[in-house]
Length: 221
Length: 322
Image (tube, rainbow over all chains, first blue to last red; front, side):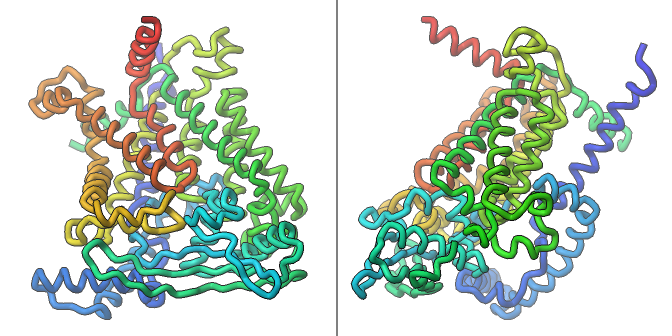
């Protein structure tokens, strides 16, 4: 004979799982965790995307412009992020300590302005390239630089610079100074290009960004 | 109506099955994480990734964050602490994979793994979140009852005794995978993921030097192939909820219905899973995303009932014995 407790267990478990599914469902929904800012929508990828939507909506008879769409996106993100955060807030300590959560925006906006990491070492007063992403001729530190956790650091810094980019540049310099005892400076930089889709006219522009030069003695521990 | 729905919901989470499928997920997922952490060690990146900047690491403002990661509240901010945390995570992952004190090692693993994420969020990718989510679900399961040293200790066999355990953790893992794929699909709102943007998303992604495994400039001459792959990916991800319907059909096999019979005849569930395998193998061949495709494939045993896995294993053994 089953006890009343064991009879209640399936219902209790189902109720608990209903709460879990609801909270995780809200967390997984495409509602933004924080309001979008005008600055975030002013980057080249967002501009290209918004222009595409203006054109598409125009074709459907909806007259709008980029400024109006930007404003709408910001207003919507304020409301939706508040809703999302109010549901998740009580569970945040558990999510934090277990490192669990939801957030599945994978390649949401393919990067039409990707960066290419370049590392140069100065010897005899002249910089020479030792690493260039995807360049088989220049592969210094390639296994480390292509390791997913390291790539995450410099690649994410390319879209929004954080202090870890300085740590990254110094780490590169430490290795380079050790491997080239005559090197005087190490330069880390990103080259931003514009990918156009097949059939469009190629854009030859290549912008050098996020240049960090580390002199010998400045590379730190 | 509400009463009927509630009874369905309660019954949905009350199934029993052998622990094999969950055990496979545990074993494969634990080994994938071991591989990732071993690679970090082999590349001499442990301190770089998880020690404070004062000790030469990438993490910034580590001791001035709110809150400071627990491990650096309890231990000094040194390379030794980073190495210790890495070692604890690695060995906990290995013990969990092998099913040695499965619950305890799983708990240590998830807490330590979460610390790695807190210390260097930029080095913690979407797949790490997914892995921890599944590990957390498995903490509440009996995944250590099969394919484990615990099972060997208790039953004398590494495969366990086939006793029935609660199936809800596997069902929740399925829901988690479906949500992940579906939300990834829903959020792909860039025009290049759609016909309006020529389905050029994958072409663009493969031109990113930090993502592509090789130079793919030549793809411009065969772009319809990348457009086809983009369309397939987008449709496949957005059709993920269909798997829940197909799972329901499987769980209630034998009931009448034309749609159900059609789905069974076309083996839609297996077809969808097969496309997923191809997609992840394609990612592994063309992109530098580390363990992402392998960790996702490590979750795939969850799609199958242990009876199906057993039948597949029997078929493989018979083929090998021929």
